[in-house]
Every structure is written in C-alpha cells, then in structure tokens.
Amino acid sequence: MRPARSQDQSLKDLVTFSLSGALAGFRKSVPIALSVFAYGLVFGVLARQAGLSLAESVLMSGLVFAGASQFAVLGLWASPLPIGTIVLTTAIINLRHLLMGAVLYPWFSRLRPAAAYLTSFFIVDESWALTMGEHARGCRDAAFLLGSGIALFLAWVGATVAGGMVGDVLQDPSRWGLDFAFTAVFIALLVGFWKGKADLLPWVVAAVVAAVAAELLPGKWYILLGGLAGSLTGAMQNDD
Amino acid sequence: MMTDYQAVLTIACMAVVTYATRAGGLWMMSRVTLSKRMMAWLRHVPGTVLMAIVAPAVLSGGFAEGVAGLATALVAWRSGNLLLALATGVGVVWGARLVL
Image (cartoon, rainbow over all chains, first blue to last red; front, side, top):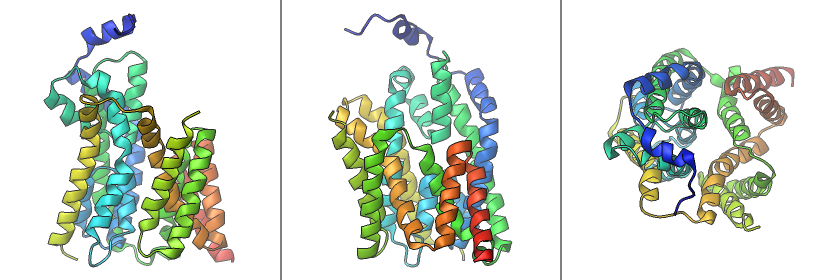
C-alpha cells in the first residue's frame, strides 16, 4: 500500500551497480579526498605521538576507516591497553553509521546482498553525504558510494602512512600547539553536526554531564556518560 | 615501539564493531522498523558524543585553549572547512601561549 509516486516506481526499475557509477563516485570525491588526506596526515602524526607504531596506525586506518573514532581512541591509548573502553568508545561514536545505513536501505535493498554489504564498508560521513546528494539529483547507481568510499579510503590510508613518517621526526608537539589539534578536530567536527535548535538542550546536557563526570570519575567514562545523557535527552524531547 | 599483539587485537575489535555499525543499518532495516524515538536517539548520538569529548578538554584548559576553541568553532561554522578550522585552532593556541 505504498503511495503511488512515480519516483518509487522508477527507483525499482533503475537501481544499478555499475563500473561507470563507481568511477563517477571516485571522480566526484577527489576534492573531498584531498581534505581527507590532510586530515589523515594529522591522524598519522598524532597516532605516532600516542604510541602506536607506523604499522599499527596504518592497520587501524585500513580496517576501521572511521576518523572521529580513531582520533578518540588515541586519547585512550595507554599501556596496558584498555581494550574494553576503546572498543566501546569506538562503537558509540560509530553508532551514527546505523542511521546512515538505515537511510540507504530503500536503495540498497535492491542490490545483491554481497554488493550491498561490501559497499557498506565504505560508508563514512563524507561519502554518505555526497552519495545522498547525488541520489537527490536523480543518480540511481549504488556503486557511486563504493567509488566515493574507495577514493576516500586511499586518501585516508595514504595520509596515515605519510603522517606517521612525519610524526617520527616531529618532537615536542606542544611547542607548536599541536597538542591542541585533538580538541580542535573535535570542535570542528562538532560544529558540522549542528542541525538546529533541537540540538541545544542535548548538547548542553552532554557538556554538563561530561564535565562533571570528568571531575568525579577515573578514565574516559565521561565520554560515554555525557554522550548517552545528551542523546537520550534528544530522544525524549522529540515527543512534541 | 614494535607492533604488539595487544594493539593488533584492539584494532581488530575496533574494526569488527565499526563494520557492524555500517552493515547493521542495512541489516536491521531488512528486519525491523525503527521507532521514531530510536531514530531520534541515533540522530543525536554523534553530536552529543563529540560534545562530551570537547567540553571537559576546553573547560579544564587555560585561557589560550579557551580562545583557540572559540576561534576553531567560529571558523568551522563560517567556512565549513575542517582543515582551515584545525589550522586556526592550532595557530591561535600557539600564538596565545607565546604572548601569555
């Protein structure tokens, strides 16, 4: 009993997964890939300073491929490694992918499962946003996301290698203000997530709970507590 | 530091949970319909988690970090350029520490 919109009908017929779609996605992502590269350089440098070996930081970029969570766990990287906290933090920060995948579902459900689940590895904020933009403009080739994701993946992993090599050379990061890079990255990412007044109360709750928890509790529990308190506030206020 | 077993295990676990969040959206939608409240919760997760990371760092820092934090946010907001904002933040904190 779906509404008889012509777009739904054409969607069913026209969803494709082609090489030319992937190439288009790759090409259109080159400008974004450049900024991802520069951002990845920063990750590479900071990862070395957090105590990861070059091989470890490249492994992380290649297998995890999720910038915000990778930056976040660098703050937790200590000896002995708090594996549970690191994995939980990663999961919480990356929960947003669930929503992105859910939004892609009506489109990707028309693909073979192998193609859909392979492509889902390449869901990152940038590739997803670009792909949704193309979709709104009438693109129905789901391989666009694959091509876009591969472009960003190459930039991210390549930059991690390059940054890691620079990080070996760079001494005393606080002298250059680079210790602030962590916080600055998160502030800049945070600004991008502002969608309107509905975010105000959840964000204030997150900030207050996190600040109090950081004072009272050991470790990095404040990230989870602040994030949960804030996001649950957002879920509650959605009633009206 | 050489690559060690603990670190590789940690990274592998991170990779598994991250892929689960990516594939999970598709998988979940093929089985259940998310309630509006669940969708609202998911929508608020990234921003509030980032805020929870940022707020204690800025509040526990000094004057230089506070000013640099504001400058970073302002540039990110006006330009939408992550790198420009990052460079501004690092530059301001570097300058402010020299001056103060």
